[in-house]
Amino acid sequence: MNEIFPLTVETGKERWNYFAQSVSVIVPFSFNPAFFDFYRDYFHWKPLYFLFYREDKLVGLIPLVYTGKAYVSLPHFSYGGLCTKQPVSDASSILQGLVGLINKSSLAEGFYRYNLSFEPLPENNILYPSLFLRGLNPPGAPAISQKETSYIELTPTIDELWLRFSSNLRRKIRKANKSGFIFREGGEELLKDFYSVYSRRMHQLGSPPYGKDFFSRLFHHSMKEGSAFFVAYLRSRPVGASLLLSYHGFYESAWFATTSLYHKYYVADGLHWAMIKHAISKRGRIYSMGRSTKNSSVYVYKNHWPVKNSPLFLYNTSNKPSLRNYSWLSKIWKCVPIPVANLLGQSLVKHIY
Image (cartoon, rainbow, N blue to C red; front, side, top):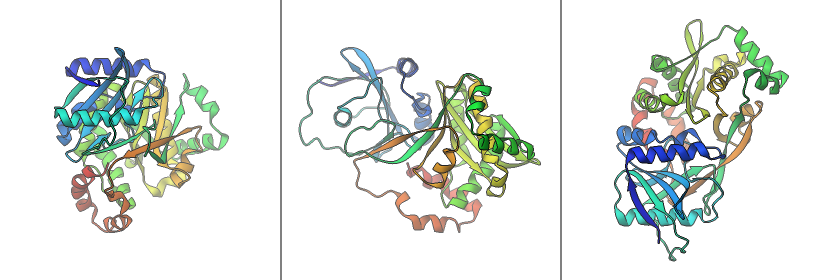
């Protein structure tokens, strides 16, 4: 019989970190248990972080956040779902059983030990509320893959990685450095400049932006892992920006934007290179450029770096359409004045996972 037992937050985080550090599989930055507090304190949602045990051995992790409408792993990040040492053939069954137990037990926020038996689930197990997962591991049907994440396996030294770059990529990075860009890394002192580039780019794309406070709180909860804001300046004007988040050697430019006027000077390449050097200096193992639609212009750009591409699997038991499906909203949003878009966006984007 599958059973759930509560853990203290301190014990849960300690065991979670130990497991994440001990496995050979890729563990994305979003699995940082510090984000448990972020979801609870910023969104006032209910985070439920589960440690899976079989025969008294810790075999996997899954972070869930109850938003009031669905169990999501993880809201506003590309990655969630199951993290296990070995592929799990009955992942879908495990997840359904877990949600069933949560609903019956009315669990409070917290860290939990989930003891797995080998008993089959009863038929016609109904999930309610909805379960929404997006991650590197397929949880079973009806999982689909629409996007991929592109990442670089880092070398111990900057020089070693530089030699792996194509001559064309090295040329672009050199041009960015010769064009007068200054690349700065730091903490919240760069938030204002980061946000000025990010919010304008989001407006051009017709997407609602997160608020400044979102990034401030997110950075606060991840800063111990080596996360940092990066801003590219040209004559003191911010023209490129990113928030680099990390966890146990996995680094990702989770929010990245550049001013289109300076694309011809390869500011994006210079900015990525600055973050890659930072990651290597911190003994990082992975530098991720994040998710994109396969064969899109962004995907093609990423692949002129020496990246590996991994599919992101989406598992969604809800039939309700997402706001992302309404392309006409993007056209309308571009017409909204930027100050208004920035103000309204932080309320609207909360509900777009």
